[in-house]
Image 1 (cartoon, rainbow, N blue to C red):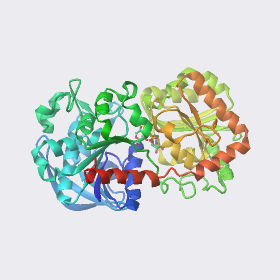
Image 2 (tube, rainbow, N blue to C red; image 1 turned 90 degrees about the vertical axis):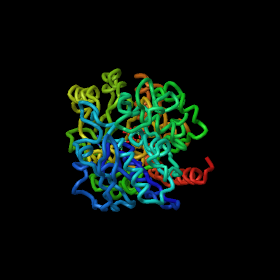
Image 3 (cartoon, rainbow, N blue to C red; image 1 turned 135 degrees about the horizontal axis):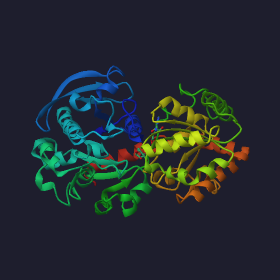
Image 4 (spheres, protein in one colour; image 1 turned 180 degrees about the horizontal axis):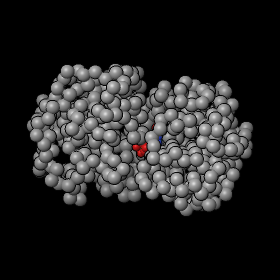
Length: 479
Ligand code: ADP
Ligand code: GLC
């Protein structure tokens, strides 16, 4: 089977969050199940040019979005799968992927509309694609163009699977984008692409794809409720017969404390306890913290409301009364950037915060050095941070939601290996922190858990198989 995995970000080319990790890892693991997955992403010129091993294929695609535009097709085979990078500099030669700190790029509808049509043109050119696996709102117009315009009638039999990684980001635009995007006007209705008077790219994906999945079984249920559905719960419920939940994995080659070039000391399960201690000492030295005998909590995160850091506002004094250390790497909304910068000033010696930057190397140092990894998320479709941290022997402390619920089992259970709390209140959060500190003091139990989580398999081994089965059912018209 041959598929195109379409994503607006792919690690290691361009990444803002977990979607890139998924798109860069799943194709490698799909090979074991007889699926050849080519990855397609925009050629973000300033971000990728001159790096990797990207070559011009010579293929040119003429794409009609707000006039005719020529898209150049580049290719790279450096990372265990073929990646196609679609180049159109007026749209993609920018500093960032989606926008600046002042807001989204105003022409994002055209940028990703062009990308979506170019993907279809590429599929047409390749000629042997069975299925398009699209991801999030940025590729949401693909099934609409494929099935509801004449332009792609020759490849209309190609199946489309949409994966929703985060339902809060929908790609909403005013109705006057319909014309420039070439969307037939009769599709602007409640059963179609219209959403409270706007054009909704993600809704297009939900309505027009052959099947839909999200990145954990729990989140697949949650998004069918008003609390988590962000207005799309009704339409998802209608499609619940083709809506699935498949938990993400992580790439065990990319995330591996035994070979990671960025951490201070490499370690494996055999020398995990001493290895982690060495990393902790070196990190403390690096960031000017003292007291490596105290429990260290780590955070590596986008700083968005989703991630639940409002709880720090509520409990900061009580939290830092406790005998603990915190190291934060994060970037995102100003309120949370400011929050952690202020906390670092207010509680020197207790917290180190590196804010407003994306730093792959420092992230890995935190995963390796921390005793606990904090994810108090309001909602979490899957979450990769908790799985990455476990690969590094770092115990997750998470709120019970979405993929965090599906991947972390509380130590109250005999075979548990993490700490969970159900409600995002200051008190429950502090209770979870206290339980972590207690566990830390019980060195024997803590060490056993470190080894246990390092021996568990959170790689794509299982879930890639689930995707391949779903693809197959779609291609054989069994769904
Ligand atoms: P989300 O996709 O919602 O941001 P995930 O937990 O699925 O959350 O994935 C987050 C990914 O982004 C992880 O690989 C994490 O290490 C990485 N990450 C987040 N923020 C940063 C940062 N500031 N610097 C480096 N890596 C980061
Ligand atoms: C999204 C979600 C995150 C998930 C990631 C990859 O960014 O917020 O929970 O792990 O996508 O699917």
